[in-house]
Structure formats: structure tokens, C-alpha cells
Length: 266
Image (cartoon, rainbow, N blue to C red; front, top):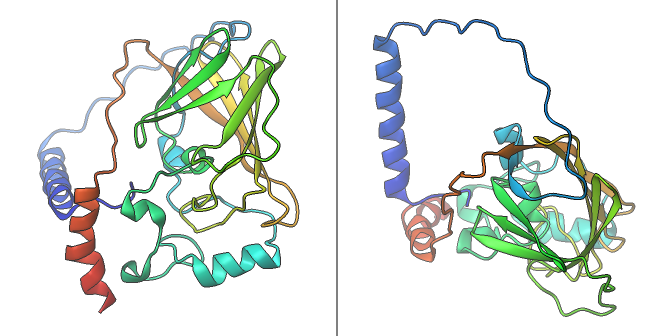
């Protein structure tokens, strides 16, 4: 999650200071000789399998929220301006006033897990499903590929209901509904309603590169559909990559609240 306990923060600061000192005492590294880039192998047909990560790590983490979105409806504007109090973005408040559900270790939910902290994830294909297993909060999604329809009146879920199909040999399209309104879209406190429909497009450019486009369609919260990620580039990691745990621990969240958030709100 975005905020860590006090002890991990102090440890990171100390490690950073030590690292900076060591770099100052070390000679500048020699520039490697230029090498000719090798072309990537062709993409396999109808296959997303593998461990993927953002080509640009900081764009994957995206702490300040989406770059832009469609205008809010009155309903969406009321939530964004009067109810949600984010710690990032244009409506940012002081840390003691933030009410981001992630700070209490609620699930990030979908599609926030694609718009914030999109770190390494593994795609696994079975005859009936594509499974997406994410590093952030150590969660997984099921995308059904057996031809079923989306539910007409779904009970809300943190990660919704998803179905997918191949549009062509290299483009996998996913439709999702039934997301829980308690989740935010991003760190900037952009809201969504239960009417939200999300389209993901995974386009396999080559063996080692894939592009992700995420479209938001929520007529209750936004005046028109809009693109949250546009051809966001993902890179294929080696198959022996060990995806580390990244779990929100309630005990750390409580420590942060007591030692930092609550004193700053007084």
C-alpha cells in the first residue's frame, strides 16, 4: 500500500543514506559499449501466459492517480469533492484527514489494481479461464473464457465478474461488471458506481511485449466513457522470476495511524 509503518520507513531512509554515501565514494562506472538491439521474437498465437511487469515501473505504480478522466456527473462530483478525501491528486488533503480505504487494508479492488501499483503479475491460461495473479496485495482474478455471459444483476465483488475472448490471434478483450462501490478508481479519489463497466484490451505485440488499454464506462459517475490506460506497455519477465509478497498488514496500518496520521490531524 502507499503508506508503510514507521519502522520500515526509518529503515528505508537509513538504507538510502548509506547507499548515497557509498556511491559518493565509488568511482563513476564505465559506460558499457553500445550493442545492437536484437529484435524480439514474434508473439505466440492466442497466448497471454507468463509473468508481466510494467515497462516503466513508475508509470505502473502511478501514485498520483490517472492523468485525466471524463467530466464527473453531479453524483460523481459529490463523492469526489465532498466524501472522498485522498492523499494524492488535485483534491489532496492533509495526511490526518485521508479516508482512503487502502489505508485500512481494504482490498484495492478492480480496476484500481490496474491503475495503481500495477507491479508484476502472472497470467495463467486454462481451457475455461485466464487467471491473473497480482503481486500487489497478493490477489488473483478469474476471467472466464468458456462463452458465458456476464451476470445481469450481480452482487458486488471487490474484483467484479469478468469474461474474455480473443478478438484476433493477438488481442484478448475482457469485459467486467459488478464492482463494489466501496473501492476507488485510483489514489486521487476518483469514484465509480455499481454501474461501472470496464474493458481491458491485452494486445500481444511480440513475444516480450504486450500493450494494455483500460476503458472506463460508468454513466452514473462520468458523463462519457474514457480511457484510463492507453496502450500501456508491459514486458515479459523470465519464467523463473520469483514474485515477492506485497501484502497489506493491518497491524502496520494501525501503527501508522497511531504514530503519524492521528497526531497530524490534531
